[in-house]
Image (tube, rainbow, N blue to C red; front, side, top):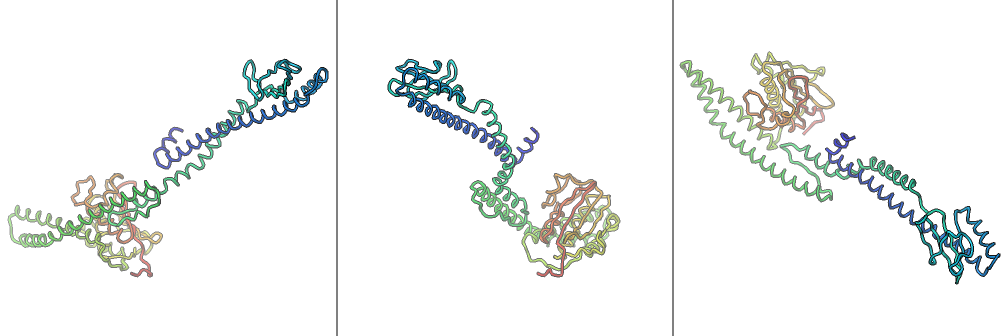
Length: 443
């Protein structure tokens, strides 16, 4: 029971539901007490009216009687009252004229006496004559009835609270849940629609705060992309020149040590050039430039990719079309989709070395699914989501700028798809989903 309450307290809905259920139980208990007080008051008032009516009626019956006639009427009235648990006394000038001597006389009206025993009685007067009618037991529901009513009220309130609290909790936190869903669906490269105000002050204030924060984030991203694009563009020409000069220099006969240094410089320059091209590609995607929307067969893109791979990488890679005659035709920009395939495969080959990499192409429910699975060491689950962000790198010794998977994710989103890690028994499994092209697709 405690564990269930602890689990519910970890969610806002659970907390609101728990508070609502507790409030329902408390309200039921308070309501039952209020009902009992009202019922006791009503019963006491009704009993007082009954006793007073009997007393007034008997007073009229004995008025003007003396001696045996009075005694006979008193005896008859006592006999009639006995089955109802009522007792009668008649007083004249304060002295008992007949009836039950244990029934006291008091001021005109009704009273309740607790000692030496409980007695509820009413007095009616007419001149020197007074009649007193008393109840053997005090009116009320009794302790057992009180306890039963309170327990029943608590049980009913608890049942109603259990049934309604969850729905009430979802209604209460609904605006917050909808806002959370909109924020959760946001991507780094798209404007976020947080929806209109819903009339809940706290949630609307939070929405405005988040909107301002996201606007600042978008502005910072735009500035970063502009800077990256500008820096990459400025570096492109000198890098091309440097690469050409190093290539020419490498053609001359050089001592082995100098030739090795030239080769290392050419490799470093090529790596920097690749980084520059990727930065330019990221800025192009983020700038929402017009893309081509042709029918592109991913099977052909993968074939071209395999032919360009060096022999050792090609030996570790296998392409497996799961669906018969699956071509994986999607609608999009062929050059960008080629970059997507190249980066997701290159990432697997680099980080799974020397393990094998399997690429499968499938068509599922209107989507083309590209799976890249390796037998390498795998990626810890907490690190997976951030690896699709620019410049994020895993805990490996593989060189790189951390842009490969970021390009994969952004190109997939630009085509209406997504890239994600999938749990695998061993190694790493990246799944890219893209909408399938149909003959109706025109743009």
